[in-house]
Image (cartoon, rainbow, N blue to C red; front, side):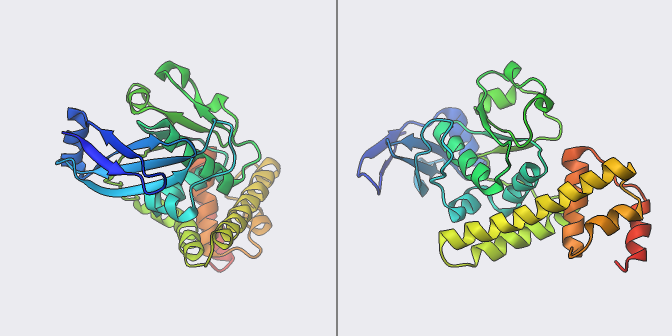
Length: 278
């Protein structure tokens, strides 16, 4: 069986013979995908178990791993990852956590990593390509906000990756968020929707960067207060971080602290919030 499609950018005919594993995955999940690098752009095709092309995406090539300018638009990123996985990845990067991107196409993974890094604007963020499971080692040894690109085979042999957000770029059956994740990511999910409603790529990206900067500022204040007060449950912490915060933003702050900084939220938080009218 041969999958064939003509690239809408350059006219080149791309051909690919899916493996049995890919066809099985397409049958189970609905679609499988493969990416073709055509020099200055990347063509991603999604095909079903019969080899029929059901969907295509076209991205500007990210170039070498060090490239920082994303060719993937905000809308492309939302379409590929879905808002829930995108919100998880961005919350991890804002908090200085780690994101692992797995794909059979390194160019596609590099496109996504460049777009994520540009949006999160974490000062220490970097992209690292890992070729063997043992090279993953301890994620804690990586700088804050590191995005790791791996093949699906490397991911399969990696074992437990702890608090890292792991995203299989070819996974079509996107897992639902847990109740805790939905509550914690509500402010970020709303920001993604608001950004998506704006006209123009520049406006979308600027709006989202501004929101992420706001969330990062809240986190920075909270961590500073923690150094002084030692306990997240002290009402003093809430008073220091709270001015101008919405309830959803406070939920996101606690989610990032717990999930990516390992800071447990004590029961005193509820009492502190109650005293402040939440």
